[in-house]
Length: 249
Ligand code: COA
Image (cartoon, rainbow, N blue to C red; front, side, top):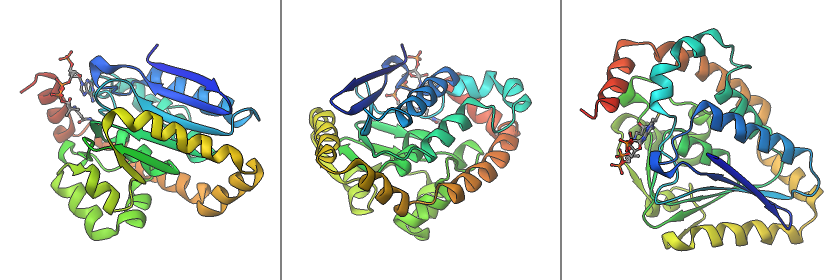
């Protein structure tokens, strides 16, 4: 199982469980995540969710083999039927608190999904990368809206265009992470934060999250980015970058 979900005492844990591939997200994994978030939305027993990555790294982003091999399939899908967009929609409209625990490498959607989380715990070895422009793509998952909101345009543009990794300490300074802890304390700290919310009124927590975000506006941006992203997936620059990664050149 590449996504392992567990539920205990009001907290749903979503664990990316493909450590041999640095938890790179496949179409099947997006579908499983969508199912878990959708079920949790309708389950009063779930009061908060935590997303974690198994192994040394949080997530290496979208599976590049899927990008390279699934192009025909992807082109024939609408935004509404593509697994990645179904996941992004479920994430955007998830009304319960979502907390991430991030250690090691976080790349691409492994970073942009953090912008949808309500709290982020980073291991002090976390390295966050957004290589969309280096791959000939545009940022996705609403990050063109959320990233400048969170860290300001200048930092956002430099990060996206230069492709440099952002450390845990920088992520904390920039307001991307609430806590920086030792890598082996990431999971426990994220779980503690989730459990701390259980003392509060679920209705008050969800209403507060609702006032802090505007999912309809975010979903509009995700769709607009998605149209361009999908066109660029077949560009010569993107194809060359995928082949270079897959050939390890
Ligand atoms: N898609 C598919 N496979 C991936 C992957 C991805 N996004 N990221 C890593 N993997 C695979 C590697 O191909 C390798 O597989 P193999 O052991 O069968 O050869 C395995 O995971 C380990 O990766 P490796 O590159 O050897 O680990 P590393 O520690 O040297 O580097 C990363 C880790 C995350 C820095 C590096 O793998 C990387 O840059 N991945 C691509 C990230 C990316 O561009 N994602 C897309 C964003 S839009």
